[in-house]
Amino acid sequence: MNPLFPLRASGSQGGGASWLLTATSAVFLAGALTACGGAPATREPAAPDAYLAAVEGEAPPAQWWAAFGEADLTARVEASLAGSPTLHAARARIAQARATARRAGADGGLSAEAELGVVARAPTDGGARALSFPAGISARYELDLFGRIDAVVEAATLDADASAAAFDAAGQTLAGQVASAWFQLAERQAQRAILADQTALNARVLGLVEERFRFGKAGAQDVLRQRQLVESAVGDGARLDAEIRVLGHRLAVLAGTPPAAAPALAPTWTLPPLPATGVPAALIQRRPDVRAAWLRVRAADQRVAGALAERFPRLSFSASLSSGHVPLAVDNWLAQLAGNLVAPLLDGGRREAEVDRTRAAVQEALATYRLAVLEALSEVEDALARATHQVELIASLDRQLELATGAAERARDRYAAGAASYVDVLDAVRTLQTLERTRLSARRELFQHRIDLYRALAGDLPAAEGSPP
Image (cartoon, rainbow, N blue to C red; front, side):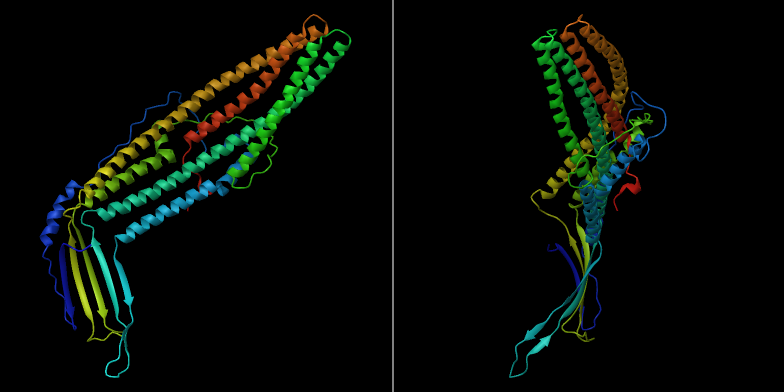
């Protein structure tokens, strides 16, 4: 850009340099306008004083997945945190953001360049061709009068900090995904085992019904119904086998390895106690995803400050030392020292539009941050509510199982004695077997709610779990 107010002085042949700062008054006038700049203030939304279902006790551990006491689960979470392509990509984004911040800082600092050239002159009057090697060194520095450079650097630094916080949030999400898939796989394998027991029992009952049919004590309809029940278990087994294989693939991919066969799990199903929820304000400060959203608000603020500063003049200084040939000779050098004051006059409203755009970006980032806060609070409240009611559901299922077991045994005894129809036996058996499998799913859901609660209360990843460099 050509300066509007060139400030240039030069000396040659060993002469000195003199300054001609004809626009100094414009600098001080522009400095008086800095009060109009700066980023608009933003406020963090207020958090409730307490949770609706607060829990007292111990704070959740940093490695919350270890609280379940499953060594295989802990190993798989840690392997996923170390090998996940998702986290590798997040690390690369942090490196990019930090490099961008360094570049922004370099753009606003002192810059210097050296130049060496070769010039060939055609021979004259039969003389030899003349070669010269002009050389020079130049330097430039911009005085950050209105904080434009500082705002750009600060915005880039905050973006890098937000990327680091997003890395921790991605790691916590990954740990939750691994834990969820692990317990889902354990539940499906338990479902498959109980289904095998149920299938064997149904096959024995089928034999009994077929025997009664041969002696005329049961109808063909009873045989067909029992065969249908056995075949239904075969279909359920095929579905569970597919789900088990898919979950095995998912665990492998989450760890950054090719899909593999599902491991045979033998969990203890020991539910850790409810962790202390603390206070909502502490959650907002601890959650990395919420912190990342707030850092992006601050970065957007700084961009507004940079856009405002773009409307004011820039003052830069440059110096150069050049020679017609190398080596430099005392009598053959040229030194230049210049100051440039560049002030915008007409730009068709481009700078004003950029200010409006950055201000709108702040409002967008602030709304995103407020949503992140609300979602964080909701995740805790939801997990607490589900965990409480899931315990009540499991207690009810236990009572139902006890009653259904007694009803099925009585129905079989009455059927063997000829005092009950096969339909009564079939209904009782189906109810019992459905409750047995529903109880397994409900137990796994209880563990899922505990995972959700730990995940909702989690902070940054422990340093040993692959925090970004």
